[in-house]
Picture 1 (cartoon, helix red, strand yellow):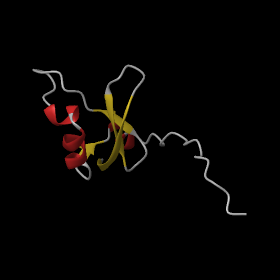
Picture 2 (tube, rainbow, N blue to C red):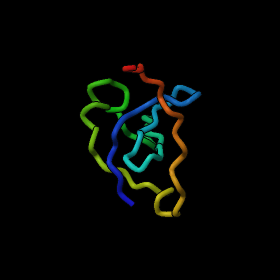
Picture 3 (cartoon, rainbow, N blue to C red):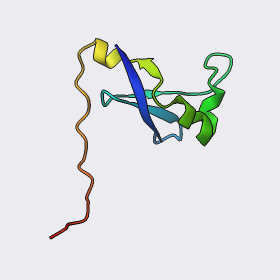
Picture 4 (cartoon, rainbow, N blue to C red):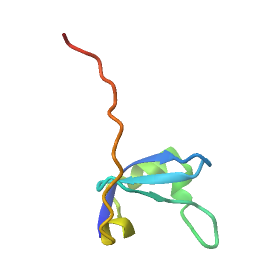
Amino acid sequence: MWQPIVGFHRDEHGDWVADLACGHGQHVRHRPPWFNRPWVETEQGRRDMLGTTLWCKRCEDGEPPPEKTPIATGSSA
C-alpha cells in the first residue's frame, strides 16, 4: 500500500528511516549501487521528499502500526 512520507528519524545505528503516514517506518539508505538515494544525506533532500509515497509492505501484510508513546506537553491549568 502506498503511503506518504511525513517525517524522518535515525535508528539506533544512525541509518535514516522514513516515517510514513500509516505509522510504520521504512529505512531509506543511500548505499550505491544497491540503494541510490543521495537525497537522504541532506536536510534539504529529506525535506524535498516529504509527501512522496513509498510502498508499505507492513500495511500490505495487515500489520498494525506501532503504538506511539504520548509526548508530554505543557499544562494550561
